[in-house]
Amino acid sequence: MMTLDAIKKHLQEHLSDGLVTIVGSGLSCAEGLPGMGELANYLSAELGPGLSVPDMALWEEIKELLATTGLEAALLAKAPTATLETAISATTGMLIANRERQVVSDVFNGKRKLRLTRLLAHLLKPSTGLTIVTTNYDRLVEIAVEEVGIGADTMFVGRFAASLNERESKLSFCRNVTYKKPNVTYHYRPRALICKPHGSLDWYLRDGRPVAYAGELHDAPRLIITPGQNKFRNGYESPFDLHRSKANDAIDRASRFLILGYGFNDDHLETHLAPAIKSGKPTLMLAHTLTPNAINFAMAHSNVTALESCADAGIVGTRLTINKMQKFIPNLEIWDVHQFIDEVLEP
Image (cartoon, rainbow, N blue to C red; front, side, top):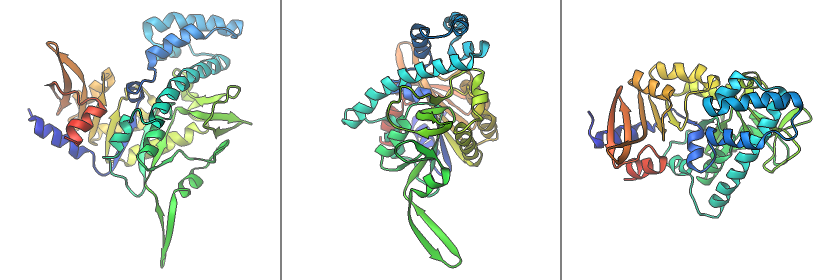
């Protein structure tokens, strides 16, 4: 088995050219946002008043499944109606937005630095842009990107009711154009292309078209895809389709992956991500607790390295999966991004 120094060198070398970063709910949970379990409890307690009689009856059936199967499995077993799904989406957005507001306040006032902000300082910034794919609704990725001093390209343009326009969004980061016959070269400021195939808290539907507005609109439907059967249908509507397409294109072109708190439970991404990993692209996973799907990838493919929280005989540390073998690293919690930076990138 590799020595600790060799392991750290291996981890450092992974953050090189052609990296695409996948951010899942685990990273937001580490910053204090709710996970699926807390969201299920909140929905169970808050959703109900104002529902129609048929929707209320269906929601009671879904609630019975929540405690035993979890939110996503419950919504897969009992697909909500369009009106019930709207209510679930609104309540979900309310919880996450309230929790996000506190995190944003702490960042703004200098009380905290996001894990992703610190990590981005150590990632290469290609001239074509750094791609970050996130299944999260919150805006912590966008905040982390701007906090490190690079542009956040979400493919929306404008400040009030911003329109979805990939080309204009990209060109807004252009800082110079040079001409050397016969070629025209566009020079862009360092930026990250942020792909959000499940939507975002600041996406709303206005007059039948998607717009982005950073404030709170209590009487406008948020464009977020909740778990369950309907996410597959909704994922092929605007703006989700463009963000999903750009994410999949980046995954196909990537040389390697950094996967943070993502559980491999989303078929929208897995249709491209899973084959890319199985093809041999180097992959590094960090999570508090790896899902069974993530563990299967790590144990089945030697190109996957995974770090997760572990305790052995009362000693807290990290379980490392590398070369399809597992090793316990005591007293080092390098599965957490902060500790990963402290111990591996800034020792």
